[in-house]
Image (cartoon, rainbow, N blue to C red; front, side, top):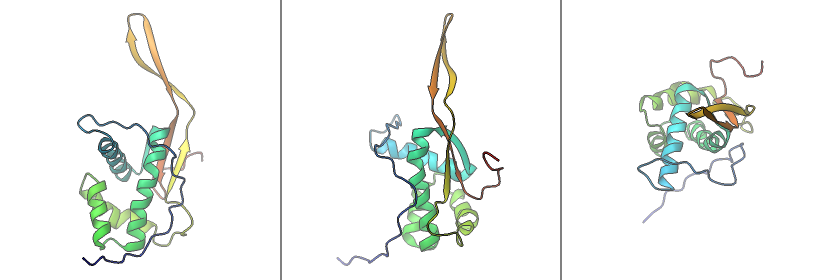
Length: 158
């Protein structure tokens, strides 16, 4: 059986988390459930181009969206492997067109040594979780904003 030689891609320019997070999707067992949750995050990020989520989930989502954009930039959207990856990672099929016509062309002239996304850590946020009688239970979680560079929203921290 002959194997096709595929040119390798450069390393993605973001740090990859050291421990996979415990992301759960009810009908699936790990690790398939974790991938299903990550697919939802990647789809949401491509649709909205800036999302706020728990910091650990944003850190784990970032390398996947970076690689997806990198495939489109380096191999082109007509490549079979790129199309297969886009079809699998993006749950809404109209977002493949958005990647092809909006997001990937944005980075065609971008420097190779810079990431395609920004990750901003927000301060701990305390929010009400549940109320039992007179007692209020709170959660405090580190939140983060992950965005695709060049999005139409105002800059964070400007």
